[in-house]
Length: 324
Ligand code: PBG
Image (tube, rainbow, N blue to C red; front, top):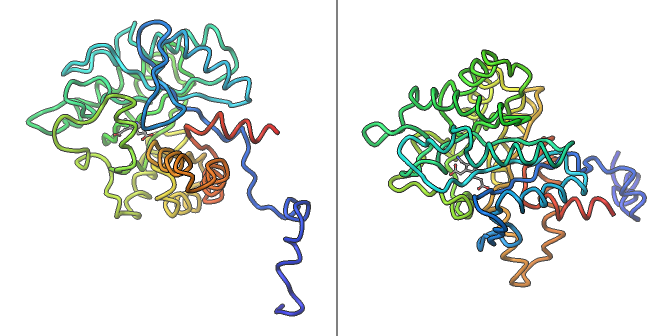
């Protein structure tokens, strides 16, 4: 049917009509709130490049998680920043590591919200790379062993879901095996399956104090120019036992999210990363765009592309708007 018989504008004439035919509805159920935890007490240190976000000590973190829960957000994602970094990333897997303590505290004080633990080493290594270094390169199989150990320690602390983001080959299989052997066969894995070597992680590296001390992560994270490879990466992670697969970043990679949605009938997460957050915040501060509306449009676009889980620093702000 063509104009003038068919007029698409007929269904756009008022908000009720628009609501009735809306194809994508963002919900608070879709959101995961990433948080940064440090040691100490009463620490509430603003992260300059990510306005409205903080490095939090465990006491403050628990309050923040309680607020997320009150807003109806189903899950938080924890990044730990240890006091001491070393070559072996030992802060990542020790029993009283920062993320283990934080997980225990949340599970103890804020029931009914999921704790997802980021499973990587860049915050814990003195060199800032995501695993064991060997001759200037991250050694895949030595890192796998560390990932297995760390997954177990996080599950022991009470993590509801572990989220490996190191981009080592075989990491999901190793972690699944490690968890199954220690009685954590019911702990799901959310795999950062297609994680790109992106410049949009810039502000995060300040937040998590983890820039690589030499080189970059292009030897293990994906080349932004590739799309078929993302599909292969996701297929591998599913075969290895991933329960949820992720594309990261989100906004510059909506085509990858769409391809993943069409290729796999698995829960699909997308990470709206620090740089995506910072750009909207910065432009809003300059008065160059309406920050709230740009946020809701960006999150809706990520869902429309095919993600059913969105990890975003906007989670509390968006949840407040969605509650109204
Ligand atoms: C750790 C990790 C990074 C992010 C999440 N996990 C940084 C990196 O890989 O350099 C980025 C998150 C963000 O930018 O919001 N491997």
